[in-house]
Length: 240
Image (tube, rainbow, N blue to C red; front, side, top):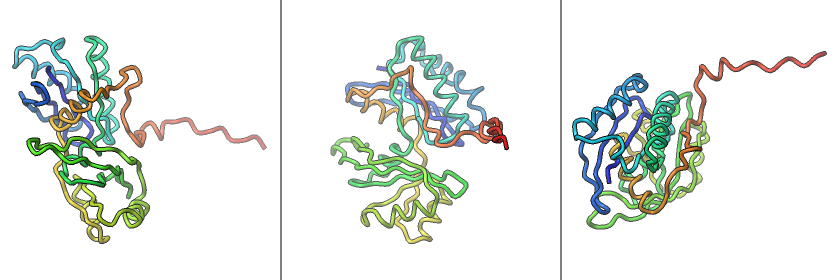
């Protein structure tokens, strides 16, 4: 089975093409995408990957997409592209939380917290129970979500203080890691997961029977774009 992985949730995105052989995945190619160019670059990048490997779009057997949290515009571009491909070729889709991908990339076991800088002194975070990996596998097998949320930095540090003292927090954000360490928490900096990592997680979910409903597929923006917020009509003043 051919798997297409897409991640446009951050400042830099990526597209991956992988082939499944049983429960093992072979990466055929991973191509990086510059942030701010997703709407122009995503579809041509997918087409280029398939062309270089002599494949048609109909050959894709599974689409894996990062569903956020992250860039509002980037996520909308990815979701629209995925829906178009899935509906045209009846291709199954698995959406993967970036926070879940961070938790699994940590290689930590047990209760794990993943966090991302949401700016404006806010934090995206998720708490998970991560299962042990099989000895022959380089990837943990599953992360059971306890919760995902957004909170002010102060509220987030209170969540950590009140939580399991053995729980570690993993983040791909330098500034957030530094702030957490200054506050006395066990914070670890990770590279942001790529479309390849998203595809690995999606494949395991697919084998477990977890697929998204394409008709209702949406991203986890957690915040609307400023343009949408500020362009919304103001409520009419109540008559005196």
